[in-house]
Length: 234
Image (tube, rainbow, N blue to C red; front, side):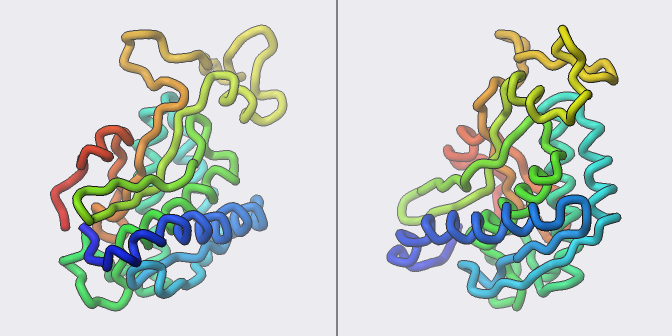
């Protein structure tokens, strides 16, 4: 997975979370309905960071695309696609356009990204989307870490919202009185037992380290990912 000294890996989890908080929510909230600037990490372990500017029109189209989702599963699929699009923009403004899946395919290339770079940067991108009100089924939570032998891997994570939390996120006037539904007829309710739906609190990784720059991120249940799930890349 990650070819980094064990001593360095032991201190990285704290730096990942700190960098995410500094570069994600604050920057995203500042733009509101305008463009936004997000800091993207690269060259392994967030050794380098560059600011990427996302134009208002690009973000508006992204929001319209995410609004199509009618279930949590659909939102995750569209979110994976959105993360890829945002990284594609980042690749035109920074060296991360050279990033390839895993660590071996782009070893020593300027702009390469390891899972520290990806988990930090992807969390910032997800926080940007969430700050715009475009996540209706999920919230962004802290990055996750899995350990296999002395190797560690990190990923951005989202968590499924409850029906009450989803209703609370609706803009004023969108939730119809006396019914858990929106004005366009979408019913908001908890997943029933045994129907295969998502349970509130379920977590999923949004892992962009598995793919080349600009491709949709890989989304997996956190439990599956912790057991080593995901494409066979190194």
